[in-house]
Length: 446
Image (cartoon, rainbow, N blue to C red; front, top):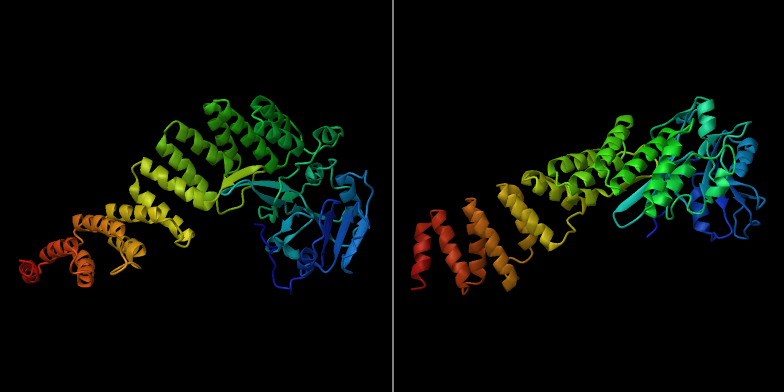
């Protein structure tokens, strides 16, 4: 399901930014999308090869452009003709996270804010991409490339630095999926990112030698932005993994992390290699390093990450493989709270077993009540009764007699014909020094 556009308070009007929306002939006009954007941007400029849409509101400035105009040329024309100090380019199918937009005092000509695109590739996996989309008005062209508008050369020639806090955009299709590589490479000032796209394409086709060649070509270029360089390192590492050159892959991930520790894929590659080698401690260490940076914005292009929930499950399993059940309990418990308790019964059972094994009384009581609280005393099925007895036997092994007595006292009061409850209640009475009551209960059945 697509996320709705995130809206900040209507009082925040970014009238110093010209929002330039690229509308293609295949796009379906969405009046709500324009209204949401208009709560922040007083005016919206649309660039399209199509004539003005009949439903376009008055605040939309619609410019029809030539079919044969490349994206870079189109963007450069707008950069040079804009009446605003800054321009933000947005493709129509992209959902802008308004809350990630900067205030005017946070942008400067010599420090730009890159844009981070997030694309879901599966239920728990995501890929991210970087591009320059927020740029200042300029008398000279900013973008090279053809249909991959690229500001790399301009950034280097003008000593522009890049902010570490990006603008965020959600995409529901991969970036550059419709780009023709031959067209891009036909010009002199092509985007280095075309090599990343080609590398990714060959990698997906399992043509790892061809993919590695693309990443090496990018690394040989004179001007390469930091997030693109990291993507090439990580792409090469991935190719080494798939061709069983695991030592080279590890070396490449180390090199990548030395350049920039705040990224994801190098740690995941290390985790995978060590896991395949059954080096559980090393695998756990790599995944813990990954989890440590997961809450931050990766600074690598074409980075890939798995969700926090999936990571916690993997950390729990690895912790058990290393014999660290205390860590496993911690990670699984974090997963439980991230999911707001919405987990399968078998997962709760595991949490309770780990809590008992770690002799953690408070957590054991908590998870016991999560499992059985709504069934005690009169709604326990035969299967639930058996499971309850098994867990309370574990409580007894830990010496938690008082709580076990309370449960069986309650259950026996509700169902005094249950001989198992009676037998176990007598045991708990004995263990809690309620000898007289135990004798009376025994005598009542003679």
